[in-house]
Length: 345
Image 1 (tube, rainbow, N blue to C red):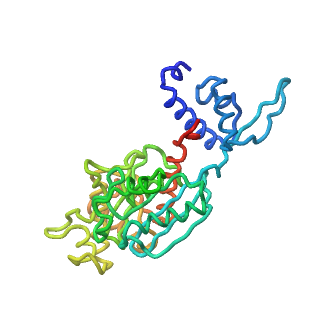
Image 2 (cartoon, rainbow, N blue to C red):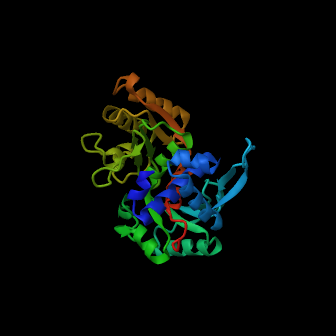
Image 3 (cartoon, one colour):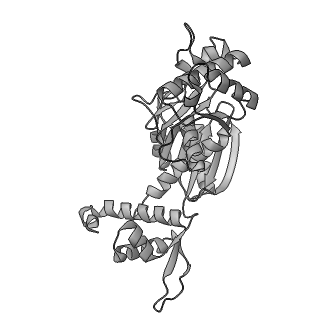
């Protein structure tokens, strides 16, 4: 309890509220005594903040415990619709988005033609319009097919209007909504791991071959690998033959199109072997709409000609769109949980 006194009052308040939110979302329901024990805050401190959160509508009373001779303990639950998040992913052919509550339930979902080649004001208008319809939106998570450094997009080939754009700052300045911007494949890795509750020591690569050129998200021991300059996962540049990188080997075309089966199997197998030799991951995940089961088997067999079979990761396919949105929602939930109860309290 001594740690409560060492923290500045505003920092202490923010931390206590964040921890209570996290605990209630994890436990579902809890009493004051259970929260005090779990979080190691004093009973009066827990009582004070629960009262404030109840008055604000952030938590509700969900019932009473059976009496053991004294006063029946009140159980509290988090109000999942107190605040909402919006997840948006920008792709070559379309823009998809969801609005969800604090337990990940989707309130609304929608799609529209791609806005990547249009001015960023189009994206601002989309968020602004949804905020008008759903005033409880208090976080935005945006996924982009490019490399991102703390909200700034520094590599997004073909989309000049987003190149070198600090998208997070732009959205926050325009709309005053906490925003996070993430590379598409990093978000997919986060979604894949979250949905499957993978262990913290799990390492994997999630590979996407398609529309915007190949890219990958990489996690080592449960943590996203971003690299020195946030360039990690840009596998299209990986040298594979004397004069061809991965995208050229994948397609047999310097322009990076027209993927053909035999050369694609070998190119992907070389990539699997490279990742096995460097990271030795547990899994390599592919998009289910890009690889047929027969091709996945061919990749496993060919990869074993480059590295010993016993060291190869499990190869699997997954639904990229689902993982992508789940990952963005997970990032957005982090923003929602960390916000203060009310700026005036």
